[in-house]
Length: 482
Image (cartoon, rainbow, N blue to C red; front, top):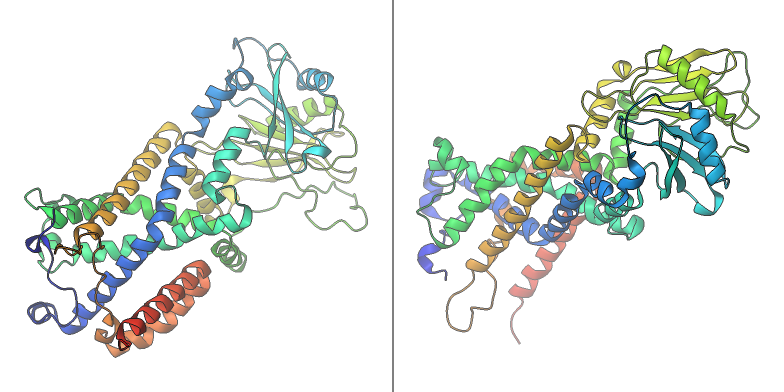
């Protein structure tokens, strides 16, 4: 299928014609990028493929939830006045008296049900969520949820994040996120700085493959041009994925602490009250989620109505999560939960006995790093801009799958075509490209790569692994035959 006419000239730094045009230093940098892009693509592409496939399915989790649990998530007939929260909670507790009352999520839209979240000891970190029709106080059903997510969304999320392999499985997604930006950036440099120069001078040459090309050149054009179109989306997914990864995420958290980029915590301590002995600052603050809080007994259902009324008077609209205090020294927490742009994430601490707000945090008061982190994660999950967000993620995921396919196809097309060699894959770019780099770049590059390896530990470890394999393979090939 591929012939010698379809192949590129050698990519080593010793090609005289090319070196004369681009200079030896530039050619050395290009040769190094070619080798890095090749090896990273070959070994990391399977991780990217799995990430793209699982992310593609996870992006449409809301629609899948409606198919699987629509009878519980939505009411039969919307309209009319809603029943008090106390009545809805009473119906939920009558149907499910087990455990303790953890929180309540009010409906986000007129067709949504109220969610009464129960902390049940035998469920561990998960909760039992009871779905109640806000218009009739009829219990629609229940689900075992995890921080507000349905069983299906939780399963799909764990599949995307760790392949259901726990903390060890998280390494797969961190490998993908750590190398994705390297592959994208390197690919852009190689494509825009091609030896022919045509691509850098022509927008059409950059954005569209050459339809007249055949064989490996045609495949490379499809691979590279698609990568250009996807570049911003892929870089965004890489950056946001790293923010909550296992090791790079820990480094990111340190950076946020150093830069003062954390979201402000809501002070839930009631005026004049003292926290119980041994309680740490912020220990009982609300999280605005659906997790259990370890209450010894149910809060008074009527207090939910008072907390909601006070929060509404303070300007909190839309869907809110109401979390009762863990002890008498703390206030109720009422937190907005509107993840669709424009987002609403205000929180208030409410003293239900006095009917007043004791503290608040406003979304507008969040530092810029905290805002960007929150919004980035929501966009990565496909919820920030609704269906449009999901469509963009689907296009990027499908495009990445095609880029990976074309990358492997190029490797196969570059295989030897002589009889007896057809089953072998294409040859890797020549070794020793680093010798063509200028000395100042080498001196500056070593500490820069070391710093990058510290910030992205998985990237650093896998890069060392690539280098070790490369050295071993080189020595084996140089060893004299016996």
